[in-house]
Image 1 (tube, rainbow, N blue to C red):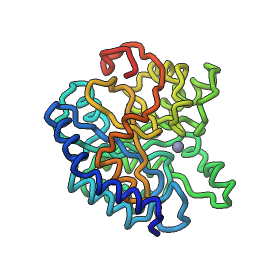
Image 2 (cartoon, rainbow, N blue to C red):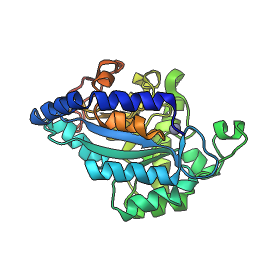
Image 3 (spheres, rainbow, N blue to C red):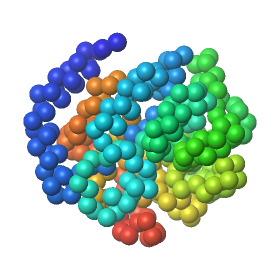
Length: 289
Ligand SMILES: [Zn+2]
């Protein structure tokens, strides 16, 4: 279904195409090409909801991104941000939450095409098999990935990342015991589960209010190599690479295209998120922007 909003967005994108192209060419010449990261949740044809995309639309988006951009992993994204010379825009694909149906179509497609992907899961739900409370509340308890499925995905080249233990909203959590349980202990649990090191963390909800200093401190103490936000922003060379900014791979294709076509308005409206990082090997500068 094409909404009026997406039609208007497409028209704006087409009208501003020459401007956008010039802006991108300038960024590329200056080694400042944006390095995108997108996030998905669930790829399935049954029970559509705002965080689900159909198999057909998912494949269409992957085809589109693969034909126009280099598809890279989060480690390569960080390297490009850190080294400060990005001459071509690239995209890193991620998933949040760990919905079981992703094993039917989305992950096999990415594995078959050898497209890097980081797949963030909540350990408590994987262990208990308990669906998310927001899905239970809607009366559709969607199934969660099992540990076996995650191990098979990891064997197939998908990087598994941490999305806390209980999908907790970290905006108001300052209790160190809770933070340790949700991040440090969950990380150890996940590493045991998949038999591999876990390198990345994605904040549930991922809005500026969730990106708290207390959580970041525990993420760093845990030895993770970076965290992902989800409030909709671009990564640029020269920023601190520990924070990976992502935008939603919207089921509405025109919105995804708008992000990928480089919308300078998104840069102007990006919220400022104050925090500091203790220095690590992947974060040479201890400042947030
Ligand atoms: Zn989530």
